[in-house]
Amino acid sequence: MKTGIKIKVRDLSVKFGDYFALKNVSFNIKEGDFVGIIGPNGAGKTTLLKVIIGELKDYTGTVEVYGKIGYQPQLNSVNREFPVDVLNYVLLPVYAKNRKITKSDKQEALNILKKVGLEQKSNFLVGKLSGGELQRASLARAILSKAEILILDEPDSGVDEMGKDTFYDILSEIRKERNLTIVVVSHDIGLVFEECKTVLCLNKTIHCHGATAEISPDKLKDIFGKFDVWIRSDHHYEVEHVEHKERKE
Ligand SMILES: Nc1ncnc2c1ncn2[C@@H]1O[C@H](COP(=O)(O)OP(=O)(O)O)[C@@H](O)[C@H]1O
Ligand SMILES: [Mg+2]
Image (cartoon, rainbow, N blue to C red; front, side, top):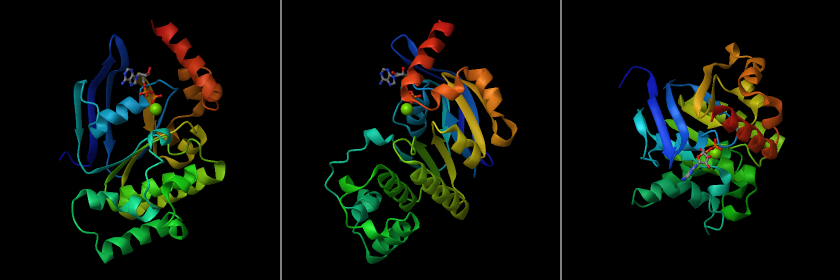
């Protein structure tokens, strides 16, 4: 393994028909980094994550990942009808290994649920959880699977302000405790700048990538235009994206 590098992407391009979702994307993510990926709707953020986790294989360029990934998809793609309680939802990666669940697996799952503030809800059906609680249950599951790299797609969307803060606090704590590398897509620029070490601005290509301390939100405004607008409302992301496409094509 190249020292300290967990994810290495070179000249990555993804095309859907004639449409480039990603174009010539290159970056490294180092061990222990906490990267916030920001960019308008349709910028290719989810596509990038799907290539990294190996779900999307039709791309050009190279992608190297060093370490076990725990992936949390966008909330709207999680099947909430799945009739399973929170404890067993968290234990799914253990079941997936085709072995019996031991007492110590259960104890460890309960400890992790306590860490994410869900110890009282271990026997609730996942369908009964709020959006924020479901995100925390998914986080607990990724941790139990012993992932070294957490890849989270908009874990804060549909979660209220307090829920978001709780989620990021838990994430920061667990990151330090387990020396995790975290990549999180978020529309909440304030939280990204507060919590993440590095920010990566994506809109088909990379517009900036660096330490949050060294990138000013004003600079982002120059890059993305109506930045304040599109980070706050889904409706406006679409407007911004259409404008972006018109500028480019
Ligand atoms: N499977 C697919 N087939 C065709 N187009 C796709 C597919 N997945 C994503 N796209 C398109 O690629 C672009 C990037 O999508 P996505 O990565 O989901 O953006 P983001 O997560 O930044 O909102 C969008 O225009 C989307 O419609
Ligand atoms: Mg997305």
